Image (tube, rainbow, N blue to C red; front, side, top):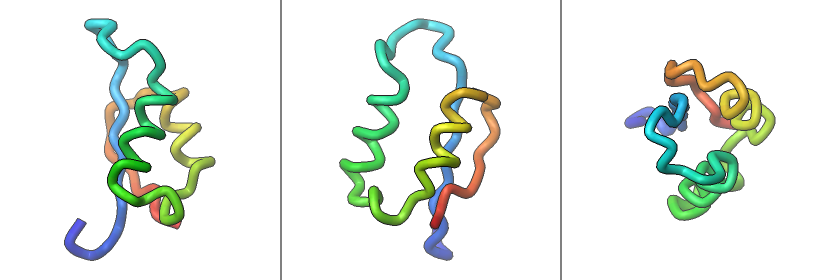
Length: 59
């Protein structure tokens, strides 16, 4: 965000296009250079829940 916060939104893969959601999330976060700025515990919870609601994952 403009305030420097990092948000993640995870949905169920209804079209089954992503083989491994955990690996895909990690790849995307790393590709943006954000690995050391996110709370991976929150990311893992969100990947399990797949609530479809954006949440702050900033450390």
